[in-house]
Length: 116
Image (cartoon, rainbow, N blue to C red; front, top):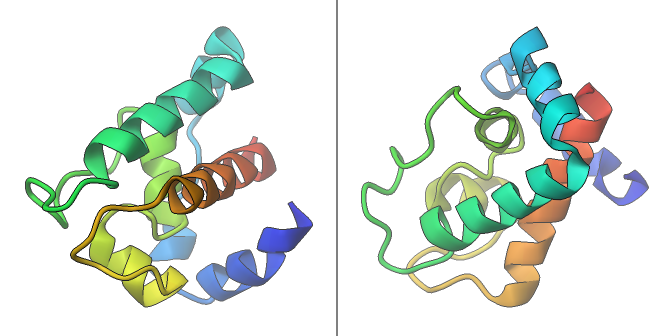
């Protein structure tokens, strides 16, 4: 968690990013499924929706709600390749490496645990 504090501080200064928070329904879903399942979902979402190149509907592939991971993706600017490039300096127009995917999932999980 500490390694992401600088990122979280930067994101907190964004009016758009700072408006995202978990709902009671999101928290209940996390409680029901457990952290391991939520992390598997995050891994799957990132591998399918963010890691490939090209991405179908890039910039629109992550819903704003419907799953705690989606909310976290918007809060952490890991929702599309443009945001990944702007906020995390991960280049667009190439597949994400396994290390980059792991970074994104770890960031999402850290945000979720911080919000929970």
